[in-house]
Image (spheres, rainbow, N blue to C red):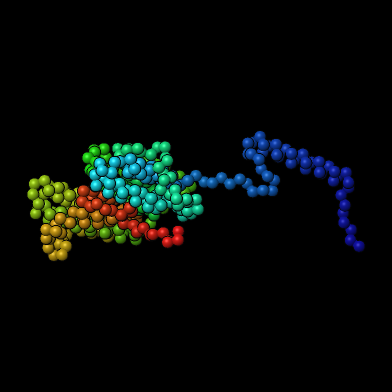
Length: 359
């Protein structure tokens, strides 16, 4: 027979009273400390971390795209069809088609799923038009586009590389379409894009969710490509200058200096970062071996398009401090294309996949 030591009854009673007093005291301390109500035995209330820089810029860019779309619809709907210039109508249509694609490109996967679940197909296009702060006329729409271009410029400098590429692509398309709208309407309200020196960080980056950059191999590859194309563009504009006269010749010579200055700066990046340096060649092969009149007319737009795409890609691959040159170059080439081409992909350099047929 085993014996078990027993506690006297009066000792048990004292122990329970002490425990109750201790529990009551602890709850009182929690209450006075302002910790809120806590369910005994339940999990602590979850406090999400502050948004990272990518989400901060998304939260600013998406409403701006919504306002631009609403303003585009307002201008299209209120304009008298017979009084609208065909070039202006075409530019508004291109903008109206591009903005939803650009908006979707900025959404996270979770945001896209939420919008698909809440989508009402019958009201998909009309909803943005009810925005109270949407521009009501073309001048207001152009001001909104300038704000979108400038915000995209700032965002591309600071966000993660995977987001920087679509963001600067949106900025380039916006720079192009704003100039086309301005020219078609014979207005002078669109300011010049920021120079590389003006593109600096303008938002505080939260330490809890820092942005990321891509692989070094991608940076080196795109840096080599951009060097090569800038040297090549400078050479071809020199050839075009030799065949042009007066103002056209001066324009080509000015671009020779622009492209060679960029190539030299990219060469410096390569030297300092350990990438391959692409030296300037004395002579480059001409497209097709010779320049006929047709190709001579097409070269400026072909060169500007290629450089815009190269610099968009380089922006997405480069370290943060190397991005300003390519951001500014992408927007400058996009503006240069405004009088030269009447079509540009909504996200230059990026392929847009069509949604499934049953979506």
